[in-house]
Image (cartoon, rainbow, N blue to C red; front, side, top):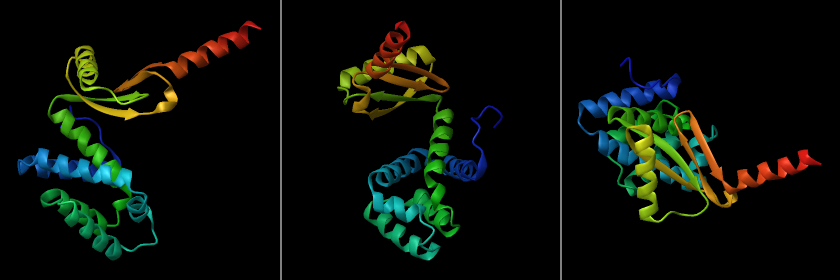
Length: 185
């Protein structure tokens, strides 16, 4: 455990416990898939986000609503039990942090490194694979890409790999030119 990434705080403790259980049960990929599905649902649904974060709803109400959502999404097994237990313990507000910490532990276990890529428009599969290969060659490890589309960067891309950030966006370059022109006056 000494060379595992540092996951701290309450979310880290929950994620570590879930990771160890999923690893012991040999269900790491299934749990990760279920949690990623729940995270995507959470990200795309304002009502669910309100339910998760709101202190107005009690643990029992949240548990009933979440159970119905998990049933509809066919989320079962360890992931379902984990999410319901987190709800009972009134820690559902931190589920996003728990999922991110869990994914970091899984990636480390698999020898992968996560890269966050921001692009102006969706990438074609061949460009995505080329980008993944280039980042993997730079990192010396397998890479999991988290691609986000942000039209405000105009063009180019931003890559965050660990603590390193490369910003080759057109927006940043235009801002640099504008700043250089202001200083030249």
